[in-house]
Image (cartoon, rainbow, N blue to C red):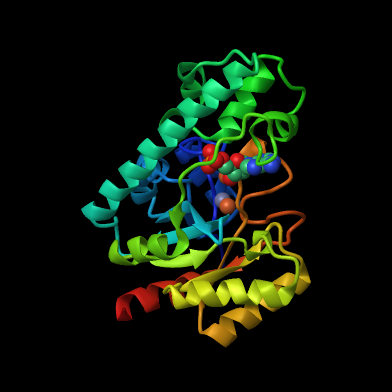
Length: 283
Ligand code: AMP
Ligand code: FE
Ligand code: FE
Ligand code: ZN
């Protein structure tokens, strides 16, 4: 019995509406799905009534962008005993307003470069969780770039002309927030850690563990077989819980299939979710 613990809906930067994503999970024969939208529970909340009515195991989760050693690290939070505490929700609203400020500055920078876009236009695409992928889409729609990737490379990516840094929460702080919200914190796709060598990678994982990290995403569409083995070994070494998911974004990443990843490199057993739940009960 298979599951997928990493997916995005139209509430963040995926292209499947929340209920359609649950439907897709059912059609793929999955027995559980975590919606891990960036910075919002809106997609999970929208799909919840339908999942409940159909007895489908929908997991409340979130993906946060955090900062560690001046680099971005993605952290997953799983709330297995129901919704996170109100304090977490309040903190999340602050994160969302920081994002909105960043977006306003990004619009200003683009306008200085004669790229005519407005905050209203981009928010019409991205709504509550408007992010750079939505800017990329707008730039493509308006003909300023020929591909979504070009939008990042030329304008809004880290090395782009209009790049504006977002005030991301320190990794250790985000881990603390997830914990206090009653959740389990998991290092997302460790293959994307900004390191060159495996020793450095292990060091980063260790620092996250010291900050209270609970788990590591061992299975992911971007992970090679060697990486999965290495991350299993980190999990064993540091006593971390293990998770896995496709990181499905719909048409934004068309080669990644929910529950299967790239060419079937993501098959996640339900036993991993049972372990997560077991750990939450005993915490
Ligand atoms: P945001 O949280 O609004 O800053 O947007 C971050 C998202 O933009 C990431 O999760 C990626 O999906 C996408 N992204 C960031 N940098 C790049 C890049 N250089 N090329 C393609 N996509 C990117
Ligand atoms: Fe994303
Ligand atoms: Fe991510
Ligand atoms: Zn993701």
